[in-house]
Image (cartoon, rainbow, N blue to C red; front, side):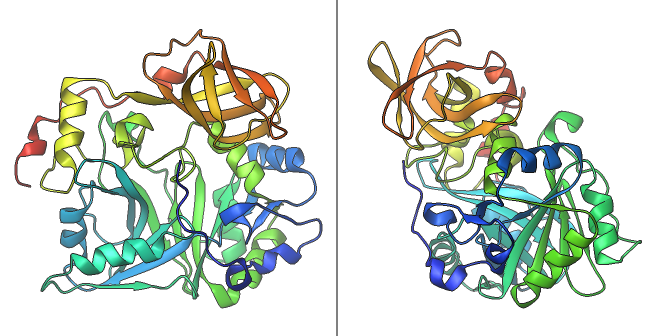
Length: 383
């Protein structure tokens, strides 16, 4: 499993780590908090009210120029040529063999497309974008040092954001989903710009804010004053695991294809073609099942070590991605396992101390990551 390059925590350290009780996360998440003293309480705030999650270690690329959307349409897996202003989406950059190289979360404000990605991956993405510019009117720039991501999750997320930003006219309707439309959709995420310049994107899991990094602390304080509770990545990941949302570099490796982790439904448009890796997308979707799948594991008594092997009868059948203690489900993990492993198989993972821990696949795992039920025959045509 590869998590990509690790950014310098000295230059990206979030000022929100100075909040009371803040404990830094590990690895390439070390610039933000894992929790603020009580991860389970933070999960309950996320479940019942509004929780502010510092994701300012994510990196941001701004793409200006009038050709930006048609250009992104041609080099990513998503249908973006008609995205339009004040809309967002997700997309993948694939290798020629169809393996996932980058996961992009986008927001277009009518002038530029803002793309936030995993920490440590913006430089590689920018190199790829620069290599594909040709004579097009596009201007990709790494703006990570000046732009930061905050997320507000929970049933009270939208009213809390509106109250905090003092913009009663902020329009953040429910985002469209593959389930609500019956197919992948282009531009499912509503985007708005506040009067003081904050870009707000409504996601299926909550609300993302792209803020000026110089005003990160001030924006966070406004959200906290409006009733949000600070929550670390531990609470965010626990909710993400339960919802079976993968993360690049955690539930992916150099062999991952979109079908294995559920990205076929939200980050790939099946009615377009002519992008790198699209032959693999069409072939696997139309002619067969992917060799591996993303599953939710229930663990017996302890969380599992990220990246550790998952075995069945002593035979390695997959690896653990992210594992957390969930306030209702107990210790859980996302894992990638071979497609041939039945749901009822007795599995074994490894805990943080290197001891074995029994694991079982959640019985609803297959339904949760099901791909769209229509063919991708038109993928081999020009757009």
